[in-house]
Image 1 (tube, rainbow, N blue to C red):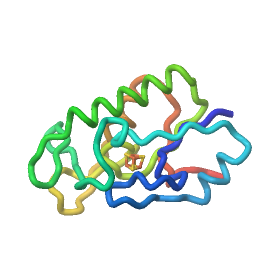
Image 2 (cartoon, protein in one colour):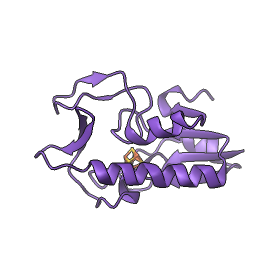
Image 3 (cartoon, protein in one colour):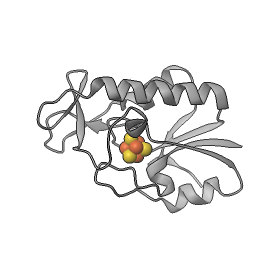
Image 4 (cartoon, rainbow, N blue to C red):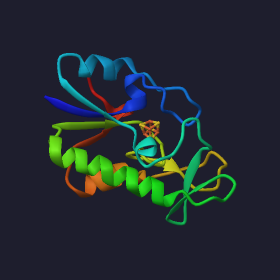
Length: 140
Ligand code: SF4
């Protein structure tokens, strides 16, 4: 099986604060399978560490009001290109991220409120019919 995963779940230090979201279930899942790691925010040209972002009225902004929507869209398109080329059987993404969140994301007020919506990359991949799973729903 070929699996695409959020790079931070595989232990890559690509998270906004320079850390990762290493996840033992993901590591177990990828063991013995072909794995493609992606970090759409880095692939869109954003640095690590970086200021956290949220989707505000349809645009991705960082807390000080700077618009980073273009970088997020570029990263999402690059992930889609990779998916179209590699044809993963399953895509596992990190929860609640403005890029990778599948079921929920922060609401754009930078107050910790969650809403039922997806991040930019997760949404694009689902629109194209890929099997996208939130890491919290990984059933092993
Ligand atoms: S963009 Fe996705 S892969 Fe990159 S750090 Fe954020 S959640 Fe992880």
